[in-house]
Image (cartoon, rainbow, N blue to C red):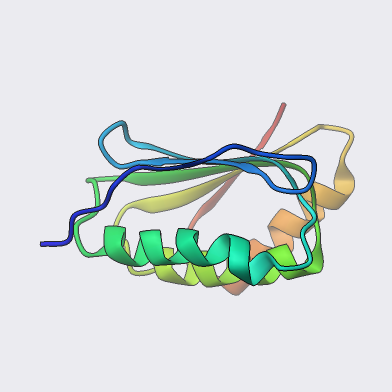
Length: 123
């Protein structure tokens, strides 16, 4: 059995707030993701989900609410979403401002590349 500790990372001007808590059934990415070294930042998140996949909750809902993300971040999200394909009853909630067509389109493009269901919400 894989033990997964909570993962919380405080956001900055260029990195998002991360809160992954298996015990509280909370999986969220919130803020801005502009870093050039996205692989370094998102590496621990990918590893966390690999561990979580071995003993997931009955349902997993990853909420992503970003003001902006760069191309390097979208590649890391794709890696994360591919792992989620192996987690039963998982989905991605993609939240964006109702005026932000770019973020909506980015979510739609990512949704087309994976089999994890997406739910689109405006805020």
